[in-house]
Length: 322
Image (cartoon, rainbow, N blue to C red; front, top):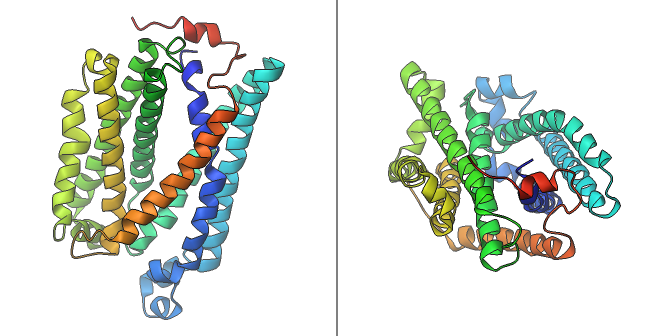
């Protein structure tokens, strides 16, 4: 019940998944540039790729991508649609319906996200595999979302838009979620590295060998300190989560670290000798981010910023940490 007042922004953030599908289409046209396994001659000359060919092939890759986005779009439409509909008809049955389908939806989302990033990221190094990779990406995605969510709500609060609605108690719990999932990400990241290092199997260590080459090793050190060490120390206390400027600063910091983590995961495949930031990298990042937030702000301006007729609204308004 505490989270009702801070639920609408996440619903709007997810509503843009259809826009992201359109921006995903250029990847489909660039499969042969990105993925070694998509070349027939490479598969014919590689015994391991032949074994993975029933799964790693261009047609199935495209079909899976469409299915992933279709599921995410449907889930987003259902949850935002029912939530907004309740704003106008006050039907408590919408909340009951969403509660019933939430467990299944969460499992479905977790599975599709896992397989999506196995397809889009892990297969960049097709010989490599890690059974913990899906959880690693999933936990990082949650950290990135929670950081962005805190940033948006604090900005709205500071502008006076939600000042009389959301309280420090809500920000305290948002901070606890952000801190907790960042520790979880750190645990998963270390577990993946430690287990692969300990077993010392060439098919597994090849990925880390590439990601520690050149100055990519410096990025790995920055992530270990910046994504774990600094937040662990500076954002641990109750006061840090409740003091909004500290909370805001740590949310921005963790969002930056999450972006750097994704960059470190993906880019050594493209630039194995070390970091090489180009104008294309920056312009693509700004373009996709600009398009996403343009449609997000448009969506934000059309509806209510809180679910005004949710049956647990009063519970959320009176929420206090003890």
